[in-house]
Length: 428
Image (tube, rainbow, N blue to C red; front, side, top):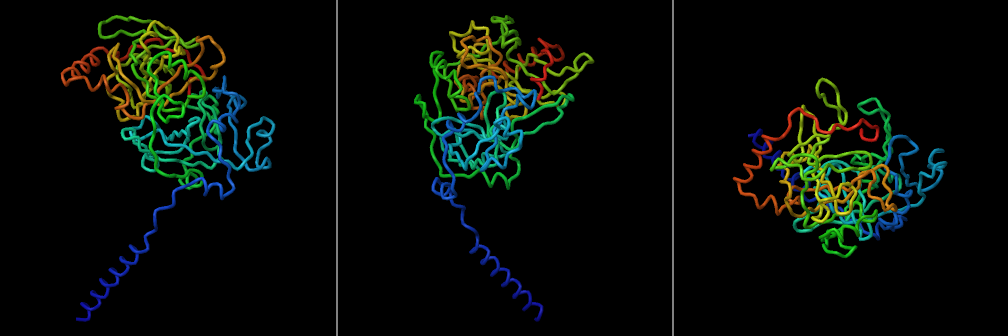
């Protein structure tokens, strides 16, 4: 009897504790607002104002030396800076913050450790960690998104291949080939540090249209493509309509090579292809930068995840031979993405692409009229369903099976097409 009484008392106590814990469950944290940020003494910058504080963007993408690696540190006082930062103008003094709508989603892995935001004036990447779609949601189907606020003091704005981002401290190290590398900033991987700098605001809805302030900007032809051929649109979420897939320097389904490979400065590039920059043994020798035809969006070989490239352009630009031609783009797919193994569309396939618009170059100059420059404009899709849905949705099961059979029969297994010259600038 005494044991039963003790047991009943224990159960009652547990029930009371459970009720107490439930009653004391903390409320959902308050969403960040301008009033809260400004009450802490911070001043709002538009993202365009922020990016205008950087060095001139032209030719700023190289990381081959400390001097070439461009960054600026946000500080509250010049006394926080190192002698190098003061001497080389690598700092911005002020208690600033930015805010923007989330325009990216990393759930499918093609956007990696990055959050892209846009405030109506410009867009920028925040270099954070994995699983951002859970904390900062952006539904590209319904266009439901949220505002994000960023406290800048203590962070770094840096350029990588002429794309600006906000992140943690610059890093330097020997890469896999024993070559010293510099990086303008790094990912903010500490949850505690993220919590000190990045705050979720109110829910919002993304707008789409042809106004420059629309969150999703729409481009339908090569004339409109010319209008975004400048630095102001870099990092934005853009829906490119009426694009055509073009094979370059590799055979298509008919066995022909209708168009030559593309040039980018002194480089010659084939499409579709995968590019390995991590070192791979070919014919008994290690090749560090290898471009090779591949007919899947990306691939993994010998436990190395490679990224793939597909060339797209507007119909009237098919005869162009320079990768930097307005209206010409390369869509990049990570070997770690969930859709890496999907088949590359057929040569001549048409459709739309919703993607983050970027450049990849260490020495591009927007003020020059010549298009024979080193660099290409890239499209990074967040989700497979945003890449040529008109084409993929039109395929029957039988047509898809035929496509995959053609890929299996035509993908080279060990031959190299156009191995590229090893360059420090290519190796990350």
